[in-house]
Structures are given as C-alpha cells and as structure tokens.
Image (tube, rainbow, N blue to C red; front, top):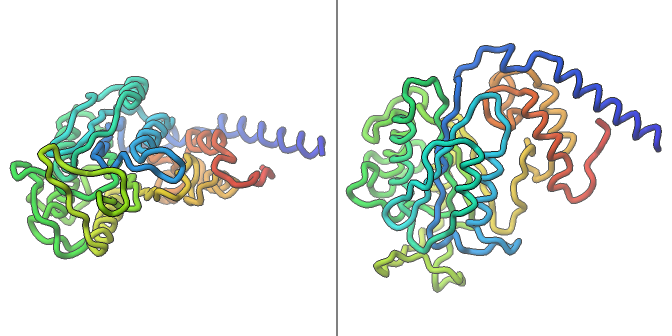
Length: 331
C-alpha cells in the first residue's frame, strides 16, 4: 500500500513539473484579449432572503459564488466592478478594481426587500463596461447572479418593455428580452444584428424560481410602496430560463442553475456532477495547451479561452470537493 501511494505521489509530482516546464498556452498561442473586465450584477431583491435546504439564504450562496469566481486564477489581468439591484434601480457598490478589493466589497453586501429591475441593471451594466477603458483590447463580461425574473424596470429605462410573447431566440420586438439581448450583442437596445456578441453574459440563477407571500414562503418580495410582485406562470418561468441559457451560451458565457435543494456548484467540476474527480482531471490534461475551440469549453475551467496550468491548478486544488465518497486517486 505504501509503495502504491508513493508511486502515485511521485507520478503526480513529475506531471506537475512537466506541466510547469511546458510552454503555457498563453505563451504559445497569441491571445485574443489582453485583459478581462467583469461587472458582477447581484440581485438583492426580497426573494434572495429565502432559505435553501442547506440552511443558507440564496443571497449568501450568491455571494459565495461571486467570491469563488473572483478567486479563480487567470492567464490575463482582470478588473471587477460590483453592482446590486432591487426596487427600480441599482447600486454601484464598487467601480473597477482588483480581486482583493472586490472580495472586501462582496463581504459587506446584504439582501434587501424590493422587487427585481433585472433588465434595467443588465443594460446599464453593458454601458458601464463599454465605457470602461475602451482603448484596451479586453474581454467584457456581465456576470449576473439572480433568482427572479424581471418585474420592475422603470419606463424611463432604455430596456423597459413588455414580456416577449415568444421564447428565445425569436423574441417579440421591443420586449425587454429583445432589448437586453441587443444590448449584449451590439451595445444598442434597439439594434439587432446577426453577428457575434460584443459582451459575454455569464449567469448564475438560483431557484426553485420565486415563491411569493401566500404561497408558503416566509419572504415577501414587495416594493417600498407596498406593490407586491406577481408570481409568473410556469410557462413564463420556463421561457425565462430559456432566455438566460440561450443568451449566455450564444455570447460565449456560462449558465449555472442552482436549485434550493441541489448541491452547490464546485470550482473545477467540468461536467456539473457536483464532484471534482478523475473525470475533470483527465479532461483538463487531455486538452492542456489548447485554445477554446478546438478544446471544449468545459476544460477551460476559468473561462479565459485557453486550457492551461491555471485550469489544472483549479482542478487539483479542489480535487475531491463535493464528492459523496472518496474520488478515484489513480493519477
């Protein structure tokens, strides 16, 4: 047994040395972007106070997910801004800054009691990103963390509109979904375009959707003027998920659904089985040194466009996390 353990340890050490000595992907392949600018947009509406089955609120989990994202190592410099939204507007909690400053900001945030001006927050976040260091060749990312659908964007907002009567991708013209997608694609809520997206849309959505007062929930999502949000019918909820999934996928972003009774996502879990094990380890090794594409996006754990030592480190550092029993160790 000791011999087998020592053999595995030696093999692992030799592999790490080999990977360090290999040209890292960002050195071997010309990068499309020189920096990454991320605006984290966090829902602080009343429903985010709901408790998950693990005893933590949705807002607590939202902050945990945001912190884990900020802590990811990356091959390119990253700057983060943080906004929260509720009622009919948003709060600019922090302008663009480094990871340490961002973690400090996230630690002091708390949930509110208002409703959800989601479209307003996303569209203005796009403007903020496009205006930040426009001369830098940077990847621009809107990272949304929310648990409920748009229900309170003010009429004065550039992305105010009715719900689309048709699902993704064929949104009704002038609907809020149509305008949000246009903003992410072109920077203009009224201009659709068949070309690629200007910005990446990452989404973490907490659910089982929004439960309102009178339906078994201890939390009321209600405006400061006493106006209660109206629970969306199941079809609309399904269309909302399709909207988030479609736009995030087509923009090159990620979509993660976090159910109230589900395990929480784990960094380094490439196949979303809530366990970092040999499957994840060997996927990263198989595509080490490649860009995405041709490498699958799942192998690019930190979403910086290359499968490299940073991705390998994330998997190794989280190996065994989330697994109900000990993962295979034949590495």
